[in-house]
Length: 299
Ligand SMILES: [Zn+2]
Ligand SMILES: [Zn+2]
View (cartoon, rainbow, N blue to C red):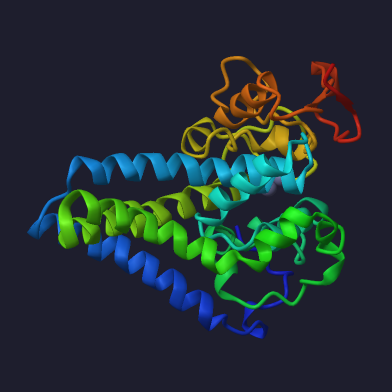
């Protein structure tokens, strides 16, 4: 429910560039994708590319942008970090530097006006509305530490070519498989359509997981657990646990929690591609109180 005590959004200017960018993606996904299906239909390679790129770019955000860069819940070689940040860049959710700075502010100032996707302004603001408005609360405090990471700085500098390469890839695959029409179809489905789905599943963490769901780990902010958002976002739906213990490399702490991101991080650690995985020592008696400092390194 929107709060009446928050400053009016009318004081914030519109971000025309973001409106045009996301308007193009949404138009391509909601109108271009079904129109192409009506006239030509999609080839199996288009659906395979859609699934692969959904997983690759989604995990780039959850494992790379979120758990690695923002929360430093594990460490990895620079080559692994670079690949994760390229994959995350293909989701068109800003560079890792900007994304992580916004997300750090979300954790530090959750539910306040300076929370970039403050859910107290309602579903649509926290889901996507915040992107279309200029944010008066951005400052260099949140990016200064991130700039000490050379891979993060590199990804920020080359963010545009990374984004373009992510859109070109399905076009080239479709072109090689089925000619120009095939290229257009694969671009629409696995480029624009896939981007639209990844964006909205990620947005559900900021909206749904702050409005509906259980709070088994603490109620010091509006964060909530949602198993079905976890299915869409590779584990990010266990958001109440994540807010209470943000340094943990896991969001779903039980074995039966579908948290593909934690399994990928753990899998990388088994082959020497990740280390220093952080876990909390949360116990049932600790629930209902926030204690994010209770973090120990994994043996
Ligand atoms: Zn949150
Ligand atoms: Zn987080």
